[in-house]
Length: 105
Image (tube, rainbow, N blue to C red):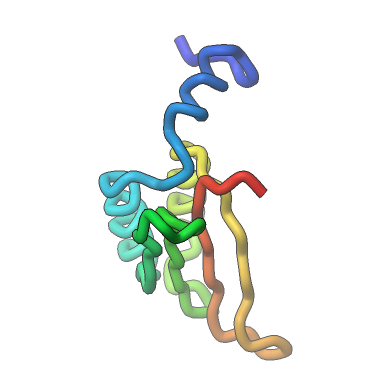
């Protein structure tokens, strides 16, 4: 049975995850991004860096595999990470960047 959203168990699980994304989680996200035509371009991993565990994924526009990007986003939601989206190349967008982290904002 799935844990109820907002329950004490879920809140405890999220807090125990800490502020950074684990190595296995980042590798899983990279594999899904690669299968969707994207790539992991940077990971902040220094413990002294407040952005430790933050990853940046780039996808070209138009998206080579639109269904793959949905799978990528579903994984990020499942991993319970924050997602920030930046579109590069306005007014003629050529890529989208996803910044993923567990930072409280």
